[in-house]
Amino acid sequence: MPVRKEPSGRRSVQTEVEVPGTPEAVWEAIATGPGISAWFVPTTIEGRVGGKTIQHFGPDPSMDSVGEITEWQPPHRFVAQTEEAMGTVASEWTVEAKAGGTCTVRIVHCWFADSDDWDSQFDGHAEGWVSFFKILRFYLQHFPGQESALVQVAAQFDGAVSEAFERLMKPLGVKHGTEGQSVKTGGDAPEMGGTVLEAQNTPEGFSVILKLDTPAQAIAHMIGFSMGGPIYISVRFYLYGDEAAGIAREVEVAWKTWLDARFPPA
Image (tube, rainbow, N blue to C red; front, top):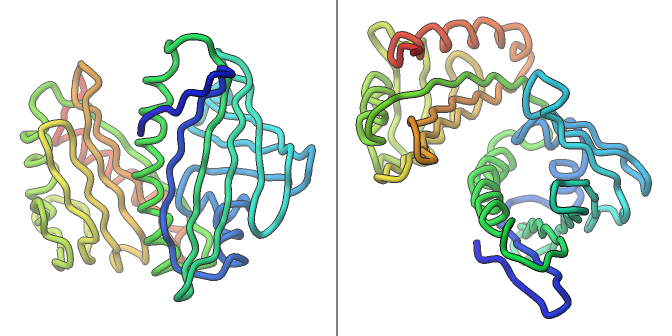
């Protein structure tokens, strides 16, 4: 997304998505810890001015993103500030009710700078939100209000994006542009069955989103992209329902073992 620049030095970048639900239901999904953890990363939020937001991007606490809430107006708006390398960044979340029982969710990142040094990073950050906002929309369509157990495994591949897509998706029965198709794994692939919600594959990267009923009610998100080096492959499962926490470790081990076989570590 293009960075907006103002004469004052204020810069901003924004991403938005239309989702089903009332403002109150959507607010629960974007402004509470269990809600945002159900479609993004494990998160805790203290819902008040002065409260902390902590997003856990990995097992090491150094990977956490910690912010402070400076404005809190449920169910429509809150602002959290984080301290980054370029200075203070304000992230404004808004929920706007629309006709037909939907809402627009918008996030705007704002910072001050006198150079373009950080623009590309925030441009990429906004593109990342596009992907996660798809998960948010599907979550509110299929699993509104449910908490999730997150499983994430990753691999790398020295080759073309198209070859990485084929190695990962062929055993799963997924092809480009097969939205709405039912899929069920076979052979040595971990057990998985459901419906394709998105299947995009370009020379720059791929993104596949599945709604699963096996091994549990879940949303699976599989992406592959390169930043000038090997192809980075990430597979996430947002598991819902009573059995989610109990089978999360089993799912993690099965998929990590299988990914390592498909994409042997260097």
